[in-house]
Amino acid sequence: MKRSISLLPVIAALFLGHTASAADAVAAAPAEVSKRTVSPAPAMSDADPLKLYGDEAIYDVFRKGKKIGEHHVMFSRSAAGDFNVKATLNLQVSVLFIKRAYTFDYSSEEIWRDKRVVSMAAYTNDNGKVTTTAAVLEGSDFKITGSRSNILANSWVVPTNHWNRGQVEATVLLNTLNNRLAEVKIQHKGVEKIETANGAVEADHFIYTGDLHDIDTWYDKPGRWVKMRFKAKDGSLIEYVCRKCGVSA
Image 1: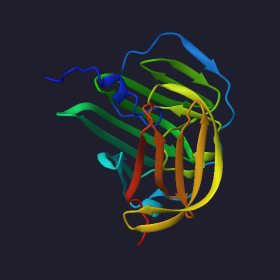
Image 2 (image 1 turned 60 degrees about the vertical axis):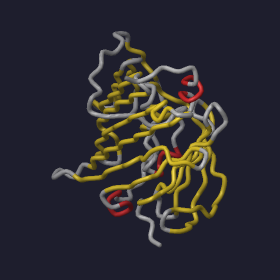
Image 3 (image 1 turned 120 degrees about the vertical axis):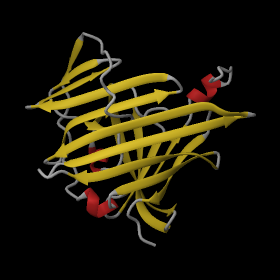
Image 4 (image 1 turned 60 degrees about the horizontal axis):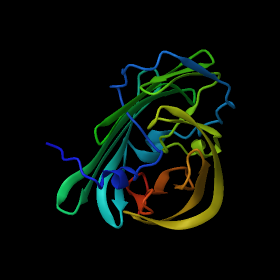
């Protein structure tokens, strides 16, 4: 039986606003539909993710230098030429003698066609609190449903799964963790050398501000997502380190 402890609010603060999950996204959503006018999504990278990453990218997740989980992104192509992108994130934080004081499980699935997301579904279990998000592109309308809100946007919106570098050009993102649209400003901070499991690579550094903030991401020259870092509310840093993401030694 999972114990409820007073430290939970501190630990639950760890994961502010990135990523979400999968084909379980059937949940009952609020009946009211909010109409949103958004800026058209930026032109997404036309790079083939299978050529960039292979069939899977893997990131080890660390907090205070200790590994707490893994993030996997899997790529495939349908017979019709659509890209299918599945992601899973599983985290477990221990506190004192409690091995599973906090758990976070996430899965998502996206279908990309002509450099656009035509459907997606996401499921998040944040230590027992479940959030679902689903979206489908019908004509120019992007219909978003979920456990917290229903939104009808006039353009498709990039989901917060960071594998596609084109995301850094967006001003609005679909936060698949909380089933809401997030207005962001993403700034390029220059080129830095960062470490991966396969050695150091030079990568462009980007910082998020706005509804999603205290998030840093790095992409190498070909456009591969090679690192991410974000700050927990307790001030600790959560860091993604590329274990397998198409980077050669």
